[in-house]
Length: 192
Ligand SMILES: [Zn+2]
Image 1 (cartoon, helix red, strand yellow):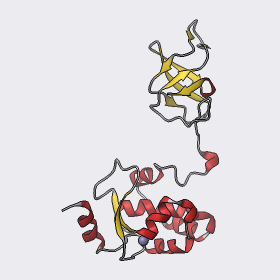
Image 2: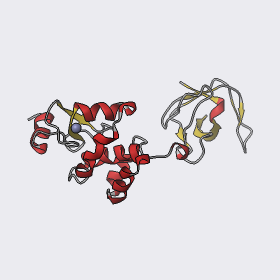
Image 3: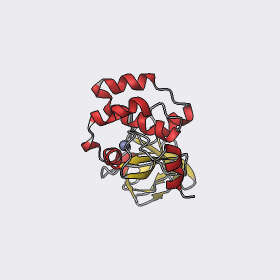
């Protein structure tokens, strides 16, 4: 059986978020590396459209989470948690969130897309052009940099592969230059 059939069986052929029975599709809950039956849910086009386009969210539609947040399936809980976070300024979603309990593992999954974090709390790293940097990116130095605590100079044009981000400070990244791990200011790099 395919994933769609498995999900149809699991859900009794209804949207696992709102219970609708029409236009049901597989939704692989991002990040899709989870995948498979446990990483997916069956959702209707109304739910899917609003999940994918935050601008079109109709908060009343999501009153359905009052029921579906109690699902036994982690994928459903994760999406419920994300949507409640998106809507929490309305009040009632925050009340539901307060009642909701997710295991650490499931909570980590739920947070993996950045949903639920206040923008102010998010540490976003950007290069000299304002392009967002992520762990594992490759960057190039846009000027010669003296390496603190050594006589080494990292030359302009040097590629730094697989950088790691400083979790606390959006201005710092780390990477290897000439085999040495150094801290670099994001304003002196350009993403490759
Ligand atoms: Zn639905």
